[in-house]
Image 1 (tube, rainbow, N blue to C red):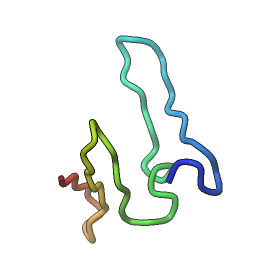
Image 2: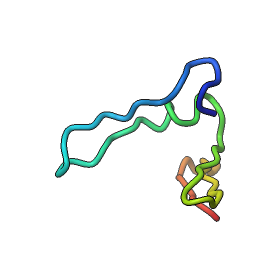
Image 3: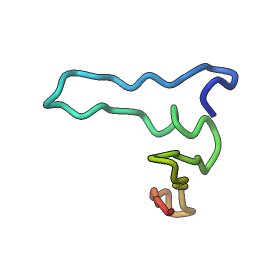
Image 4: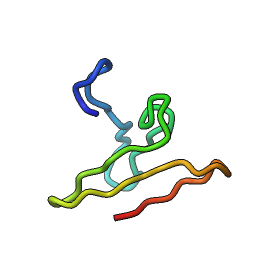
Length: 57
C-alpha cells in the first residue's frame, strides 16, 4: 500500500518511551484488510463485522 495515491504513512513519533500512534482509518484507507510485512513474513490485519481488529499470520 505504501506509495499508492497518498504516499507513505508517517506514524507520530513522540520519543523512545511513548509508542507511535496511528489512526486505523489512515492504515485501512477505506478498506477492511491490510497486509503487514514483518521480517519477511506476511501478516493480515482486518476489521471484523463487529468492528474489531484481528491480526493473523
